[in-house]
Length: 237
Image (cartoon, rainbow, N blue to C red; front, side, top):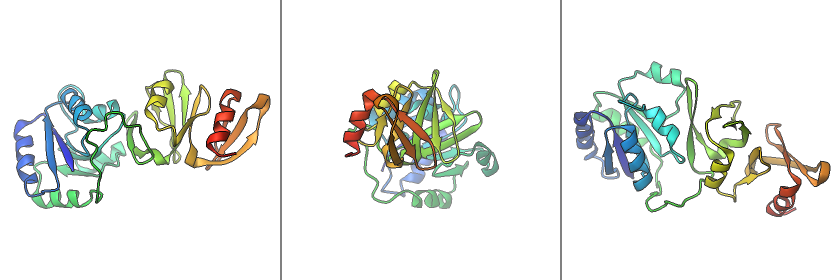
């Protein structure tokens, strides 16, 4: 599993590097001392896993994750305790308190999915249902699988993300997001909405040749007349 270590403390990176030598499935492909360095490395190397500190000079680990389109698996290496992390509502794969104990590291690595495919050489990869994104809204943060996001809704310079009972806002344009998503799974219903096709539960004719799409959970989205024919074709109607 291709891995990058992100920590501003050189000795902490060296110690973790040493501990990871006992785990041959973990291939360290890069190290970064801050969020900006990490951002460049992640986009160049496309790792499967990050070991990452939260509090670093400049941008925090959370701010780094917000910058990424496709977020790898994350294990936090941090001085925060469990209760502080829970306050952020971050559902990371795991967290390791410094100084890292070999037993806890072993437990964290055991939680990694088996048979993880490497993301090397996938620079043009579109985001699919198997990918996850990081969403931060105020003090709340989530790692969200795209399969759980049923709807993206444009709201000015922001996008409202619909998953579970949550509606956090991210600072991104719908056009930019649309370019990143796999069109086999996500459909641009209108200038305002992108829907996850796997969440479509019902379709009915609507005004002016458009369609009204009902999603699992009750949300309704209007498909513009311009997009209706394409939508019918994709849904084999």
